[in-house]
Image 1 (tube, rainbow, N blue to C red):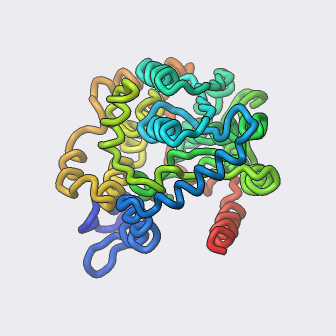
Image 2: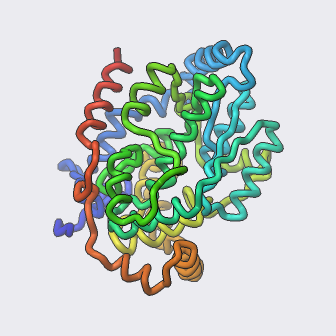
Length: 374
């Protein structure tokens, strides 16, 4: 348990609900300090249009490498703001993307409609991977039983596995990612272990799962860090870091151009993610991911601290919908609401209570950063 005296950053809205947060003498949190030292200049240059030449060069490379192929790039399409805007931007830049969607079994009806509108309006091909539901259900229930913070790993792990697989199958050398610094740089590592660790996923499933994972898509350390990026030469491009990216302007654009409709929260296109972020994390762990999302936007100058505090004063989402989601999630996972409550009441666990490749992946990240700098 976090027994520190409560403190909140003087610039953003991150607070001591992150057990690893630190503050300087002026009350500025470690997340803001990292933002300033690592990405503030990158975001500012993009906002001023000073990365346009870099973007033009990357687009030219993508088009050249894709010559003679059906597609010159590939991208994940969840139906959320970031991926929808990446699809819109890719077409505006004259690229020929293949969109890939991972149907985890939790798509809201609104998400399905948004994805249909996007591919139809933009005239792009869509590959949808439908997960084996019994395997997915078993894996997600296993993560709940493990009592770890990041129970959305089963979805987040599978998406890049499918993207790399499809990229290799079609001879595509570039993956377009919606990940960006302006709207999501801040996210405490203590709030949930990263999703790419196959050893961690398998250990939790082996302990708490009931069925073998035969069809569920996975990606190991060697594939993710060496085979696909260096042997197969498949590069990931975070397109939104090269252009002025404002979340609210992006929403207005895709609403106007793609008939996109809002979900009311970041990543709420999935019923499971909505319940996980809006109920499970705040109730069981005291983690409100809105703090991280809003703090990124504050640093990017897209919302004020006062606006963020006002939003945090409201429930994560409608309480009645939370209750409905809880009933729905329990039923879909094959347990009663009372059984799900009993699972949630188990003592909280850290990812380190289970096997992982944390040290290996940390080393791999350091090597990758050093290589990029060189």
